[in-house]
Length: 94
Image (tube, one colour):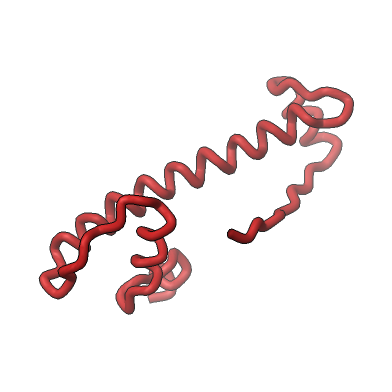
């Protein structure tokens, strides 16, 4: 699976504000770890919503007769390959 690297930009002021609440050592490892944990938490919550929404849709779809995958990668591949799947931007644009 591919890994995607994203960059977060903070001003000195923003970093000082975060350092008031977050452990931030001289090499910013603490802040970097917190940012990664925040992204991981968002992904986990998005996964839970996606799984709940699409499990219900698949179960209600009379034309879908396959089993629902039990692992995350296969589930996401199945859902995103469907013709009725729309990502957030596509939903908002519709």
